[in-house]
Amino acid sequence: MTLPLDALPVPDSVRQQLDFLLESHRLTGIVRLNRLLDGSRGESSAEHSWHLALTATILAGEHAPGVDLSRVLSMLVIHDLVEVEAGDVPIYDEQSRLDIVAVEERAAVALFGRLPAAQGGELLALWHEFEDAVTDEARFARAIDRLQPLLLHWASDGAAWAQRGVTVARERRLMAAIEQFWPSLGPLADSLVTDAHRRGLLAD
Amino acid sequence: MTLPLDALPVPDSVRQQLDFLLESHRLTGIVRLNRLLDGSRGESSAEHSWHLALTATILAGEHAPGVDLSRVLSMLVIHDLVEVEAGDVPIYDEQSRLDIVAVEERAAVALFGRLPAAQGGELLALWHEFEDAVTDEARFARAIDRLQPLLLHWASDGAAWAQRGVTVARERRLMAAIEQFWPSLGPLADSLVTDAHRRGLLAD
Image (tube, rainbow over all chains, first blue to last red; front, side):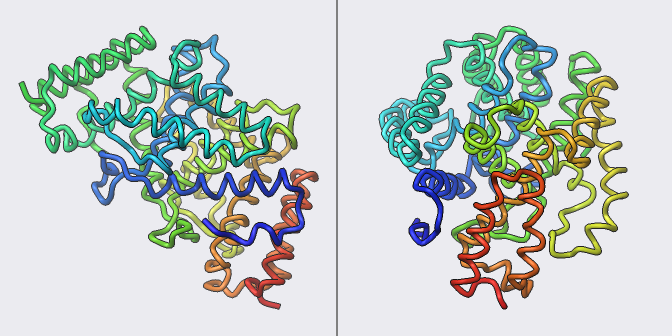
């Protein structure tokens, strides 16, 4: 994006932050597999990120009272920013998900590198924390990131599953990560998959 | 939305949370005045809420190191949810902004009332905290909520300003709230308005 940021009479660090915020806004143009619940268009990755933050806010009290919620929310807000360069690769494209790792890593370095050095380093570390899924905050965030699309697929009569021909066994295997990341969310994920199968939304 | 939530074998409190999350997802269908930066479609209120959370994350360290960031982020994530019932009313429709207050209040009671009672009460209080703009967390969040559209209008060559015939004096008056809510953000807001006027994006 070429914007007349140079002409703004603000400190360099502020200019870098505005540039980062405007570049990041392109996440609104990255379209995901699932559609809005009214079917009108694909959900953008920006909307997905917002709904993850809302979901974390709603579920944290009961499921993760000890985690640092500000860290979880910041992580969810930034976790997909690399897609402005790398695009969104659905979880069902398993080989492509592996192939994209190095691309996303380069995109993260470039994008967070637009910020003042110290802040860019902190956000890059936060993004790595999410990817590495070791801390409680990252593991809760990762579980939420997998649970939200499951809920939307379930609520939209499995349209995305049908489009990709996803079987119940495959969905159960991919969603097992929810319980691995955050055990107390496992039963909820299992209920959604089981009900979707019962209703014929996931194939045998 | 009518979803087969009743058939899910989960506790009532979880059913209420899922119902709330799915109803809230309708915020993706609420279209704001400004378009995406590539001009392709209007920004949704869900995307706006995400970008506010990102902006707060980026600016908090320098501008608001003492505020509770988790509270700021949660507030920003929920602050526009009432629009799923009330719709978005641009700041430039000043009379309509006043008229909508009671509608939004009823929408908040109804929407947060879908949650388990204790949690719904907490979120309704958080929404009121944002609206009342008394605490530091709410005031910082309110400043960010006004700064982000200003930045987007500036970055999209003032398309929304032109559409509404906004003068520099009017924009300066409306954006004065940024400095009132959070003084250290005043100079940045002023720089954007002044530069937009210099470039002819805001009329005399």
